Image 1 (tube, rainbow, N blue to C red):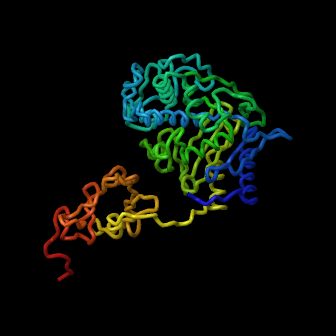
Image 2: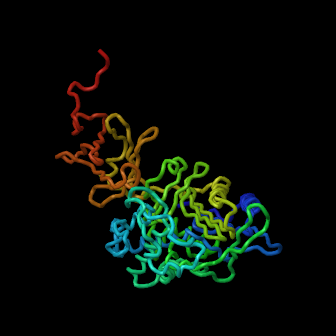
Image 3: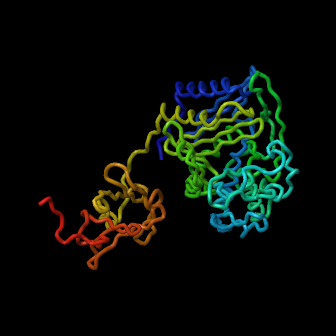
Length: 461
C-alpha cells in the first residue's frame, strides 16, 4: 500500500515524452503509443507518429501478439482455482489424443512441455488460420522435440493447446470465454480478437530505405490463444493494474503472484541476462530493476507490457512496424523514469490492532547453529525469518491457523515452520523443515542434530 501521489510532475512527463520520441524516430516506426500506470491508475499516455497533424491516442487498437498468452494463462488459472483442473495434471487427462498428453498444464504454461516453437507449414503469423483447422495441423508429425519438463523452449503451439483445453472445459470458444470471463469484468472494451476501428495498420519498414510495405492481417484460427488479440494503450494499462493487484471477479492476487513466479529452467545465457519465464508471464531485468510482463510481435506490430512490482509502476508501449524500436527497453525506461523521478511514497506505519502473546514470545533472535536470525511479526499478519546481518536464506511465512506457518518464498517456500514446546509449555526451539533454531548458539537444552559437546564452548588451551 502506498500513499496516492496524483498526477506526474511536468519534468517527469517531458522525460517520458522524450523517451518515446527518441524510440519512434530512431526505431523508424510509423507510430508509437505508450502509457504509464502508478498506484493502479493510468497517470500518463503519449504518442508519436509520422502523420502530421494527427497522433493515435490510448483508444487506438494495435495488435499485441504474445501478450495474448498472458490472457490465456489467466483463463487457465481461473479453471485451476475453480477445481476444474490441477496444474500438475497431464494434458491427456482433460484433452486426450493430442500426442503430447504427457506434458502437464504447468509445463505448457511455462514453455517446458517439449513442444516446437512454431507450427509446421507456412509461417503461421502470416498465413490464414484455416490452413491449420485441427490441433494435429498445429502440432505436425513431430509434436515433441524433447521430453516434457526437461528444458525451457518457447512454444506457440503449446498455447494453442491451452486454448483448446479452455474450450473443452468451458464448452465454448476461447474468444467467447475470454470476453465473458476477463474482458467484460475488467472493462477492456477495446480489446478484441479482430480489429475494431480506430486501429493502426501494420507496416514493414525497409531496412535500408525510408519506405514502407503494408503487412497482411490474418485470422490465426487455432493459434489465436498464442497471439491473436488487438488492444489499446488504455486497455493494457487497466490490464496491468489487474496483473499487479488482482480482481476477485477474475483472479485473486495470490494466483497472480503465482503467475509471476519463475516456473521454467533456463539456458545459462538466460540466467546471466536475468530472464525467466513464469506461468504466462516473463521476468526481465534492466538497470538493476526486475520487471514482469510480456512482449509481443506479429507482422506489422510490436508490443510490450512491463510491471515493476517493487515500484508499483507499469508501462505499455505499442508500435505498428514489423521491426523497429526494441520496446522492452522503452517500457523499462518509462518505468525507471517515473520510479526514479517520483519514488513511491509508503503508507504511514501503523501498529497491529492486536497480537497473540504466544506469537510475540517467538519474536526476536534465533540461531541456526552459529548463524544469527531474527523472527519478526509483520503488520500484515505474516512472520518473517531472515539473517540478522548480510545475505542468506529468508522468507515470509503465512499462518496455517494451527500454530504452524508455511514459507512463501525462497529456500523456505512451502516449508513448515513450527514452535516446539517442552512439557511445561516453554518454547524449546523452532523447527523449519528439520532445521533447529535455538535461542542460543547450539543450545544444549534443545535437540540439536548431532548433539552438543558436553564440555561446551572453550578457547584455545
